Image (cartoon, rainbow, N blue to C red; front, side):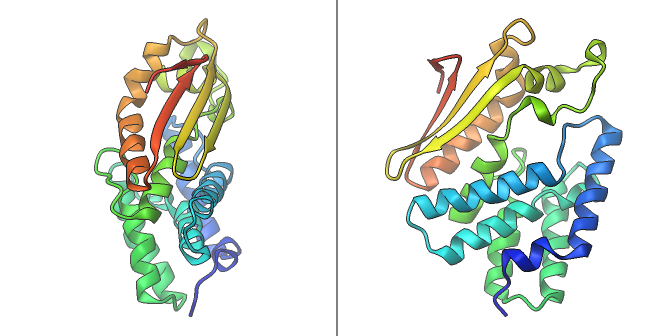
Amino acid sequence: MKITFKDIEKNEIIRTYIKKADESLIALGYTEHSFPHVTKVANMASDLLLTLGYSEREAELAKIAGYLHDIGNVINRVDHAQSGAVMAFRILDNMGAEPEDIATIITAIGNHDESTAFPVNAVAAALILADKTDVRCSRVRNQDFASFDIHDRVNYAVKESKVTYEKNNYIKLDLKIDTTECAVMDYFEIFLNRMILCRKAADKLGLSFKLVINGQTLM
């Protein structure tokens, strides 16, 4: 059967895994990885491919991959991309999805974490870009400013975050950072590998990647 995003979104098993995975990350002190994040990633990955002229089916597969990409955190944060891909295979196979669709989705999920990721196909590239550009203060759950680590500080300091893209041209992450809360170099300290990965993903889609912070183009 042709699996659809609606099939995935309404599946209670999948919703449970997303919820429980995020509960684990709360305990570990990570930023939000629940429904706001995965929905944002799903929508952006799909929109990006549609804007670039990819088929509606490829865009839907990217949307599904975006929604499922972090379920592996329910097992462990370490190697969550690979464990999530295996979980997604079992879920999708049990739902009767076509092998080719399953393969595309799990390949993207298994290649989204910067420690092991590579934009092996268009769906994987779209997922990488959607995931790694989701930087915003609302993802910070720690309300004790005195105990902020560098990840909390960097995300909290991002007061505005906007992603724009144009066919055959570029994808741009435009951030407004409050430098009284976080130095621009702090952003690079934790996000440099992610931005390099974004550049590789953009290249896979025939785009250039731009990073603009407080009006200055840095990549």
